[in-house]
Length: 173
Image (tube, rainbow, N blue to C red; front, side, top):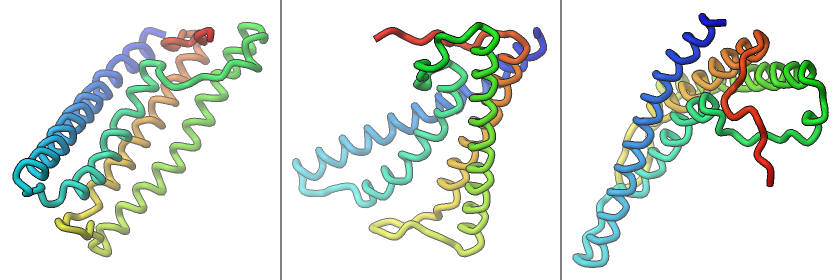
């Protein structure tokens, strides 16, 4: 059990780095948008490519944060059916849910990596007032889904061994 907790905590440190990167990207996007608005309305001189840069940054912000949210237990949980089950069946349901999540995001990760490879192969670029290659954005999306897949697997193992996941208890509304 200690080994899986150490693995989870070590992986969590890497996920926190991804979350920090997403936060810096969000700060940069907010700064860019505010500067664009001010320059547009005060001097009639908007920043070229603001729309394209924010479009490219939004997937980075979201997908770099997905696995960290799972690590912290921040995803929405619906316990309508499972809250009346015994502890053993609840644990089995959690393990099952983590494995289903891992399977789904493993498939999505594979598709994301293939999409990135195709983007590189065809030289896909964002077209607009500025141009940039799309493969880094697609690669970051695939990376985020891959990290989430690993986090689901770690959480499934932890739950199967009897460990508690963060915020495992549902909040009452």
